[in-house]
Image (cartoon, rainbow, N blue to C red; front, side, top):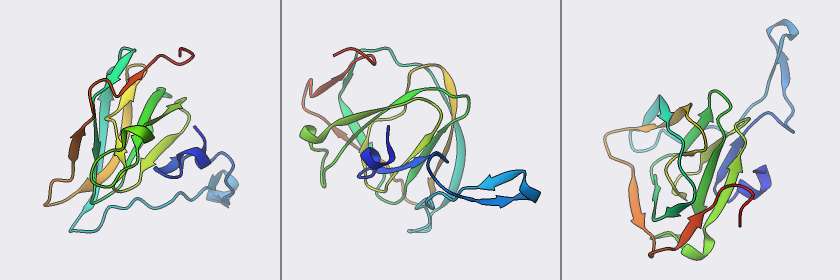
Length: 158
């Protein structure tokens, strides 16, 4: 997972490689992150904890989802590693652009509004803080992929 590699889909949430400013009498450095995109269409921020169960690999990726009205941020609370599966596409995910990122649990990610992604794929049981949009309109669109479009293998396998 690199900031540059993930840029078409959203932001990596990490202080690594970013400058900041000293706060709290020098006991901390505040490192600004891109703002979540949550307020349009009467949206407001929602903070939840998702208690994830480890997925079993290999896993056939059969569908993706997206949120058109706001971003969605996942922050592992205990260093839980996870896999992020994303794709580009306007009306539906483009199978040819399916990409996976291994996140080692030392950073989080924010999906940009409208990014096709698989629901949370934790590689171990663990909790994730999730910041997303809550509002009067339901904001989750699900699209199926062609059968056997993609299989996610364990890291290090091909």
